[in-house]
Image 1 (cartoon, one colour):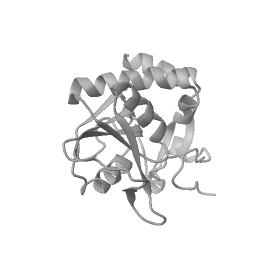
Image 2 (cartoon, rainbow, N blue to C red):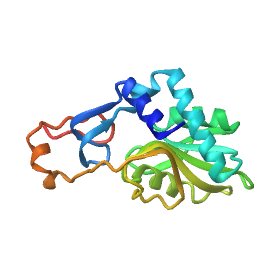
Image 3 (cartoon, one colour):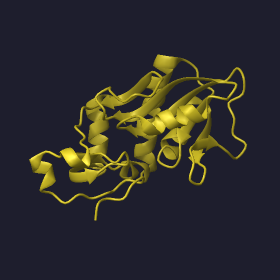
Image 4 (tube, one colour):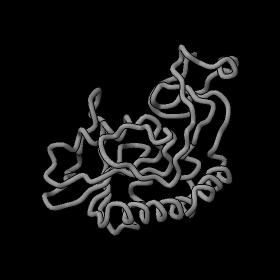
Length: 196
């Protein structure tokens, strides 16, 4: 699947939004990728995650386990794992704490795992996911996402593959460009509240 075809999927689903958004990282942007508009459509999700599985195999070879950060990564992680013939597990936040594997999930010795994310902006969720897996006996060999909106600058600590790499500017709240500052901010994501 070409990058243009991936972006067409987002546009057709109404998942490529323009305005003034507070991202889950807390940064501000004029573009928001509403991945839940994608993941609410099983057929569209299947197409994109099948393409991501093909990219993963081409870069990393066989994979035994897909690990995703909850909650946004669970759907693409599961669907990508299905196309890889791999297990799908996820990390979740302990109340008030970091990500951890729970529910009896593990990465046993000899198993090869990849982290699958939805969208990467700064790489924070993937870094936190990776940190939570350090004690696992198996090997975490890489990470993958549908769209890397960091322009390839998201630091994860692992090689990252994506279906599309975009360079969408993001700004701290105190350094907004004038054209963004005049638009009221909305928070369509999941981690922080928009200024009110």
